[in-house]
Image (cartoon, rainbow, N blue to C red; front, side, top):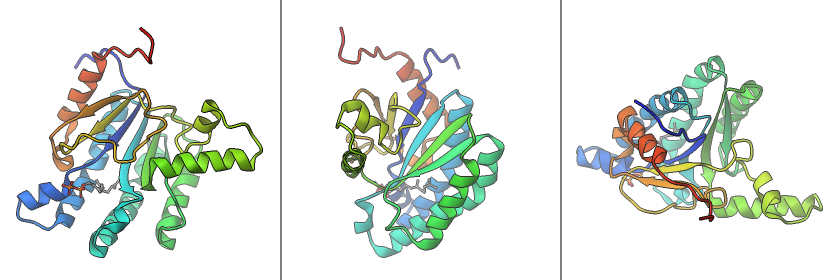
Length: 228
Ligand code: FPP
């Protein structure tokens, strides 16, 4: 596939696991399992396509309101992903960063996250940000608080530099699967000039071909950043 212009940083709202499972007469957790299995395919493919940073919305700060059984299942899948794919990330020179509030996570998930973050911290080829217990508004508030604590001036760049994704820069492209047309508190500050791509395809079905469609569409967008 000829790619005209490759986005350096892509954010993905991986929506539609629940509906995918329900349509198959299965429990929602079945959808999360398949959605989780899809993460490695898309991560591998995106980096192969030349994307430098990927930010995946795995669990929002608002998702705690879901039934406990579902929350537990998602947390289990996140831990399993870290255990299963850590070696591959190290081998491929990928740095993993988990973004979002850490304190609310279980001790063992926090431990698993710290281990992979620490072991991958010198990796340079790609960055994989996984958003867990993440909220864009909360992130902005935290960045402002940090500036105040450091006695620094509150500026547009100052806030940017204190966001979780500062190493990746602003996302060039934000993809949302699953048919909803909203951002749901994802990368609110850094998404100011991101190109948005919405697809009805549910996350477990969002394969490499679907990802390439988003890349192709991005390649034809004219980005003006407020200029003419
Ligand atoms: C949205 O589908 C998806 C989520 C809330 C969780 C996303 C999590 C994964 C893809 C699996 C774990 C992630 C990683 C990084 C290993 P939904 O449940 O809101 O679906 P619905 O809109 O059809 O109900």
